[in-house]
Length: 160
Image 1 (tube, rainbow, N blue to C red):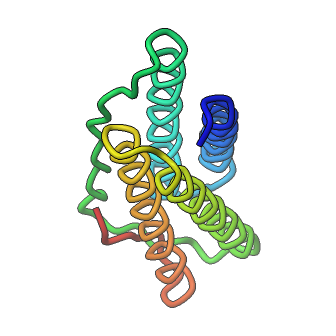
Image 2: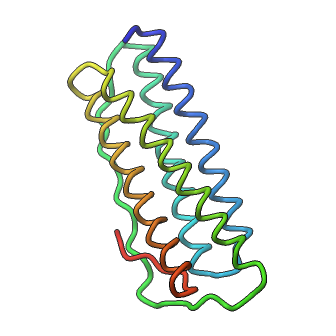
């Protein structure tokens, strides 16, 4: 992958992370359930972290041509309590929000996997592979929440 193509891909990934963070922050404001609000707030913060790391990578590549070490970040465990969603007419909108979030995470995972496949071995490949894994974990969390809402009408996730 040429340097200009890599830099273009990083800029696209940064924009995707910015959009994801803003989308999750917006979702946190739209949902009434405190459990759901916490989930979307945590996802928003996680995507900000990815944006910060991609910005640092872009700067490092511009200044020294070197990839940065990416240490990754764990996702907080879900709260121990369970909150049952109130039966309300806009419950489908919560499902719609989760569905859009799952689709976003799936796109981001594929994007990082593609960058990893094109990156030279070493820190760059490791960073993009790890970011793809983290986005997959976000998808799993959202998938659990989707099924919980679909099956039980409860906001819940079980995967860390």
